[in-house]
Image (cartoon, rainbow, N blue to C red; front, side, top):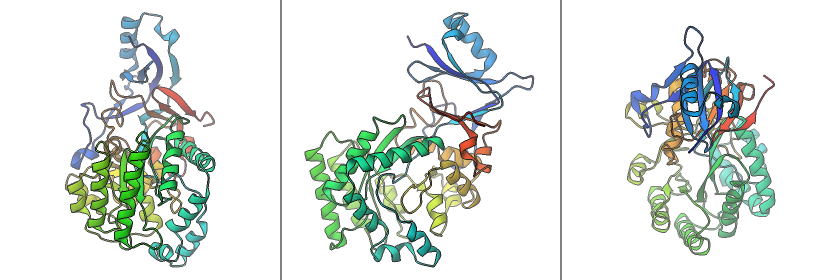
Length: 417
């Protein structure tokens, strides 16, 4: 029988998101979050995790105290690790569903070029951009890539990320893409957060190839990976569908091949990011999720995605960091702020987009994304009585996140604030 292991007690507010195991929230429902608030006469809210890392109780503290004492004895609190929640609030752990955290090299000079008017594709076509990172990543060994990946992951954890999707895509050849997948798999045993490996061998067309030749090249890479390394975990396949890279038909050919080789995997693609590729129909055919990357839109001065229109059409919106060498944003709260100010989302919508809907995009909303009994105990204890400060104090993430809890365990603490 599971037993209570850890509790965060007497909080001002616990945002549960929902209470009926909804897989996602869309349309008007994406603007409605559920929460439990401190009672007027002072009784706070508490959450209890069992020794398997799952949520076993969320309620006002007096009710939880009565329930625990009835079921586990009057002395049960002596064996429960407690964290003080007075003056603080709790939200589900944030989930980053789109990132490129494994690469080598530096592209800081490109930022200056963009400030002076160069476009993303101009830099790309001159040998910079993805191509520069590919060259540097091919040169790097696994140990170097692992150490830089773990450093980036730790920074993301400190900003509240509890699940991280990790793309390859800076190898473009079999050996380097395989190397990146091995590094992700190794890192997953060395960090408390869950890593979701995504194969992005179709991130760019290899030098000297046409787009159609690139399609054949990627398909052969996937075939070889499935044959040589069937134990190497790949959960998602992604393609960069863009002018000058792969068009809709080529994207679909690659993803259909991936589906054939890895029937349990999920499909994704970069669509309509830099130019209009009319990718909505392709997304519908592939049952791909729509993920919004506010940081990339902001940094590259791209046209704004039609978020309000998507919400009106009941598309479940997801927000991600799109962390990459071209847009190094470790902080999902920063992406949430940009989504509200720059893209017109509400604060509630942005929270759901980085929790429940992000979990759904990664096929994990049955276990993560909301704080409900039986789900995994991933949450953030915030140094504020109202969770919305995490968005409005957009330069203050590190001091606002007091604890990062993953599977009921405290993995990151900030006791200085």
